Length: 128
Image 1: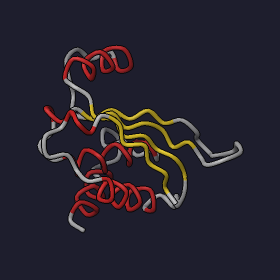
Image 2: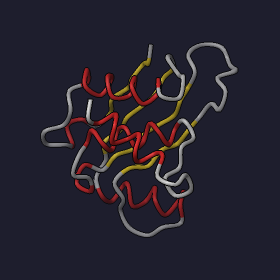
Image 3: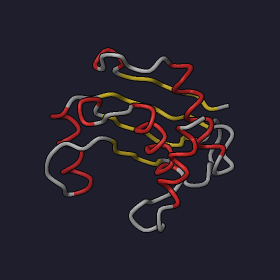
């Protein structure tokens, strides 16, 4: 089972209900063979995501979603810490897509190097 901490939901008008976030995360993680673990999804404003973007990627300005993986193999005790997904609702047109995108990055996918595989899987998951 995927354990979810959904932080900052009040920042997004029309945010997704937690059961839908749970469903999307479960689908994204299952695509990588992960059926249990813990993940945090946080909704932040443009200023905060811009700070994180420059600090962790060296890129100026806000972006739609950032992912911060924690446990690569889940070798510790307790639920595997999959990581954090940080989303700026003002920078994304589709929160569902941003959640899936962030989760796929947490499992090691990278749309900048994979010949379109990640974005194709993202589209498939979001169509369910």
